[in-house]
Image (cartoon, rainbow, N blue to C red; front, side, top):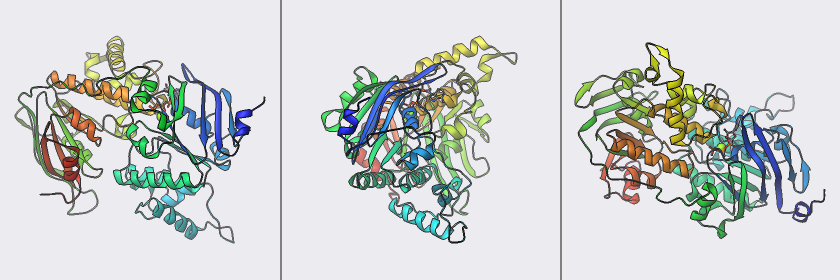
Length: 515
Ligand SMILES: Nc1ncnc2c1ncn2[C@@H]1O[C@H](COP(=O)(O)OP(=O)(O)OP(=O)(O)O)[C@@H](O)[C@H]1O
Ligand SMILES: [Mg+2]
């Protein structure tokens, strides 16, 4: 075959893939798609959950073989038999799902399989730690290279993934939702790094659901939909509305369909909740937090990462019985919650942010995961009623637009965003009185976000009380009736709907903002 395009642009077309097709049992993940990466430019790959973005990246990085199609590196056809081959050819990837070995140290993870050796062939730990320290400095991560990765919070693990990817000095770096778990500050550092990489001529493919990030970093965009290639163009020639239309296939109006919900009687009240720090004696992760939510009310909980938001929800849900103090009332009755079981029985549900940890059993099916917390609803005298189960699961799959070939598909075969939707389905299916949502739209595409906002609104209207943790300000401003801000484990501000501005909320969220 004659390859005019690939050869003509040999100098700046670093990586090009065409005609890529990939089928999994029951799913055509990619159907004749293409993508190009130019030297010194960042190509943002956009598409709804399940559109095929991660699958395409796994093919480019040698993790999966394509069923059909060609890949060219600097104009030359290539075929990677494994990730190492892709790495050696100059392509590295930051995986959407973290891919580190938990009990190995930061340095060991970064140099896994290519550890430097000294003159007598022994592992050269000094050099490994020195090089790791330099990478950490570039990424402004303050951690000892000898720390086991399992001891880092998720965001810091993500930064280690990034460090690992750049340590190969690759010509092409693939970043699959790198900012979904890191702090504002870490995002700034990453964006500065991206600028430096581009100046060095590195080509980057960048996947994100946060369109607001693009203005700062994107040079080109590419859009996939339902496993098909839809469009690619320079970022400067498109608009937010057009990107959404290309992704979703139609106009999306009214992202935040908030109807005013008259709040009813008090549903949940917590008084003076505190949670001791797991390691630092005398220190607290949550400190003297009191709050109340009414029937029909959506309470937004904003805070920077590390503010104690997740831990506050966990404490209310009975996950820290030995380190927490405080009192809880539901519908005016004092209640003792010392386990998630007790919390569920009292009418609480907590949809956690970490879908891999407490969220899901990845090897189990969509149906099994969805009904895990509400088995009594689909059982009769202790016997599971399959027809009832499928009816219930089918309803939530449809409502949340969960993209799966069947209800029996193992959850680990779903795309990242679709896994997140199963977490929500599982907790909604318990039909709680109080719904605690921890970052419910992380990694979720824009159309599904809209569905989730509509659902939260509808649930509130039907009489639920909702507490929603979010680090996306526009989201929290749009759907919360009231907003509490946490910083360093304490409530630092409260705003009524309409009285809050992004600036005021952010100011209250900064550490030492107590007033
Ligand atoms: N190993 C697998 N087995 C079966 N199906 C799979 C497998 N990996 C991916 N799929 C399916 O292929 C489709 C594309 O998934 P992919 O992970 O590429 O989506 P994505 O665009 O990255 O979505 P997200 O934004 O949610 O991360 C989905 O329908 C997914 O369920
Ligand atoms: Mg993905």
